[in-house]
Length: 390
Image 1 (cartoon, rainbow, N blue to C red):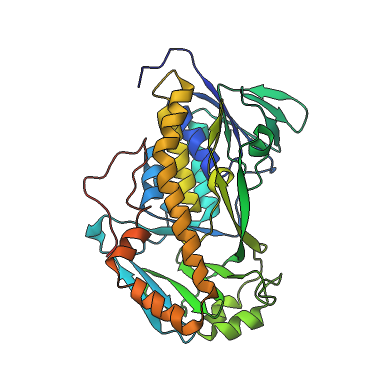
Image 2: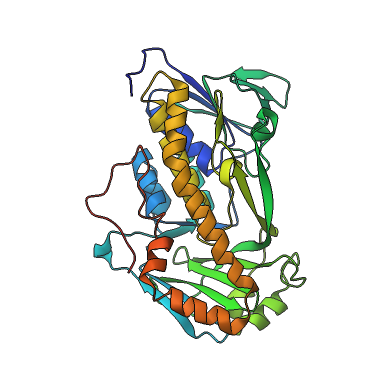
């Protein structure tokens, strides 16, 4: 990589979600002038939690958002898979000395921590400002009719990215025929279904519940099912149906009063992630199912790796090409494994439980599941020892 010039380069970011804010913070910290345009009137992400594995936590440390994100939260050392009778089908355990960290936090905490670091580094964030289109030479058109120009334009504007559509990135969006309703509910002293350092995935027929305390006062729930499950996809959620499927956690399920809407899982696969001065990241580039909890983690990896690579050279095309060559293979592997895991929803109950039991005992499967956590993107200091779940 060649050294960069003294001219301060400018980046325009579409979308103030996890990936966009990570890129904004990382670029601003490397001397870029950065502006972020977010269509929502405020920077918030209420009503949902988010799983952050070791790979995402490394990125948060690198941009300075780690302490604020995990403050008051719970660090996990166990993951359990349970059936409809609350029997443990599989269990992972990773001791502190393994170097592997996993947190599940309120999504709003993560977004606000990233926003704070981006603004502290000098990035300007505009709310109520929607990017309508972009051109490969770096021109961005906003909904109010004005235009902005950047040395780099980043489309971090989600599954139905207007940046991606307007530039004409070749690829496809595919429905994965499943989805989730997410909610954060009060956590009571009587909730002792799991040890304090454990999160769980409960299975019952085509339905699943991801269950994770995110603080001493709150629990995050993701109610997942296939899209032809009429009662399971109902809005607001049919708590009688879900409680009947998961009687052991019914008291917790019945505390759901303000859930997010049913969100279908969709997959975006593109032939390339950058064209000209425009790069896509996160869901805009590679939306995936939530089965491995790596949508946010891979978006953060994208953001910091992109910033690191384009900041090491005056040749933007060379930087973007190197970023895509290094980041894309690992992200697409994670996307594939996440999609594959979701197909278990369509298996008959007994074969599914046998598969889950075998998967929890297979070293090969463990290696596949932890490929994201073990990855260190550009811009992040490599750990002294590898992190791996046992």
